[in-house]
Length: 341
Ligand code: KG4
Ligand code: ZN
Image (cartoon, rainbow, N blue to C red):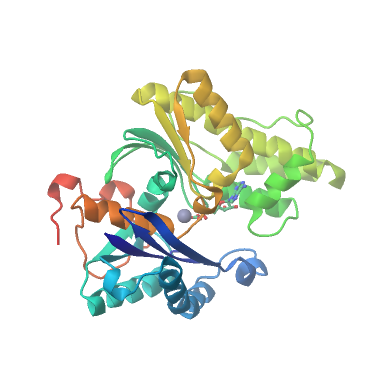
């Protein structure tokens, strides 16, 4: 079974080919970061137009790199949502048309399901069930994953997503877009303990997060200190976000009794977070699994893989052409109600 996967929910065009027997055969990515940098954030119309420019050459390249032709493709998967509608429509429109032309199923994928399953692209994939810390630019949640399509939200951010908090604080620190990696780099130059940031919502039970207060705390600290303090402030901010997540992950493992923890989404690329979650796993006797850094941020491989899992497990569901700007992951049809195409 060979699946072509197309991701276009935001500012990355990702295309990949995944083979059930041989694993990931190719993956191509075009990031629009430079196009949006001058605006300090993603401009939806610019994103859509760039997906239009990139999708055909990337599909050609992914097929060539994989050494497969259209006859070899068993299905075409694409991101249905959540994301920017115009951007999603480019990938969905192209993928659905290809599937129609090639006479194979079209498989719409939930973007967050892609992120949740991304650690399974690694040589030592986690078994179900596991706790997933899903931390991206748009989402921060702890999810109990029992199987493909079986997701329970254990906790989530009540305001800003973790990546958003990184990006906004980075902006306050005068760093470019996207701020997460830039802030993490600056934090490396800082000293621990010079500033102490709060660990939001850790003093009460529960698995929800809140990051907007941390951003305000960062703003006040930046305004009250000289420019030379920036690295120490970045360090304190990063440490507070990471410590908060570690506390919540520990609670989620205890609450579910699951022995595995995975991390995914763009903030999952953060080195300090990976390091400290590994230490947590060692302490509490839980396995930890992370996608390769390149598969933490948006990519086509996770969509091709999710498409493969759904097709292999007979979970194709509704293949009608539509995109979803907002799409709670809990709306994914429970497997027992899905029918194969
Ligand atoms: O998953 P992703 O590529 O896109 C969404 O679906 O949102 O995540 C992008 C987010 C951005 O907010 C970016 O600043 C953050 O991930 N990010 C990081 C790091 N690398 C990317 N945040 C902290 N540390 C990093 N090393
Ligand atoms: Zn994403």
